[in-house]
Amino acid sequence: MAEPRWLDENEQMAWRAWIAAQRVVNTRIEQQLQRDAGIPHTYYEILVRLSEAKDGRLRMSELAVATQGSRSRLSHAVNRLEQAGWVRREGIESDRRGQVAIITEVGREKLVESAPGHVEEVRKSIFDALTGDQVEALYDVCATLARHSGDTVDRAAWERR
Image 1 (cartoon, rainbow, N blue to C red):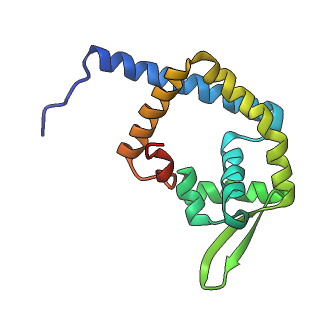
Image 2 (cartoon, rainbow, N blue to C red):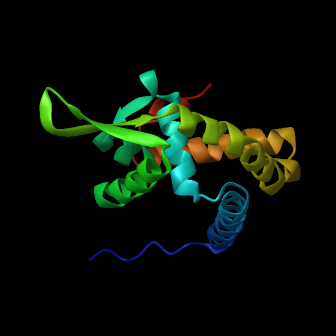
Image 3 (cartoon, helix red, strand yellow):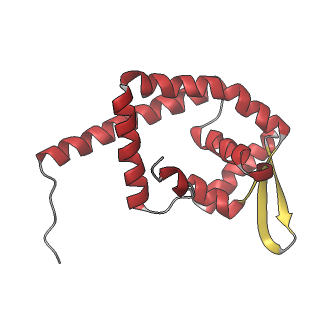
C-alpha cells in the first residue's frame, strides 16, 4: 500500500475552511427554504432542474444524475412533489420501465414564489461577502473541482466561460 499523501499546513487550512463554509452556507440555505417555502433544498433543486429542462421534463434516471442522489431517494422526493401537485410522472412508451418527471404549472408557481427568498439567502450567505475578483476565483476553483471530481450533467457549465 502506498504511503498516504498527507495535507501540508496550507492544504489543511484550506480543507477545514472549505468544510466550515460548506456547512454554514448549506445550513443557512436549507433553513431559509424550509422556513419560507416549506421545502428542503433537494425539492427546490428538483423543481429548478425540471423547469430548465426541455418541455419541463426529465427522465427519472437523468434527474437522479443531475441531483446526484440515489434513485430511491429521488423517487421518494418526487412522490412528495407529486402529492403537493408540483410534479407528475409519466411512463415512456419506448421504455416500459422508464419514467419522466414533469413540472406542473403549480410547480412552476411554487418555484417562482420560492426563488426570490432563496436567491436573497444565496446572496447574503455567499456573494455579499466577496469581491468581484473573489467571485471569479470561487467560480474557477469550483468549476475546476467539478471537472476534476467527476462528470456532472452540467459539465458544459464548468467549461471556461
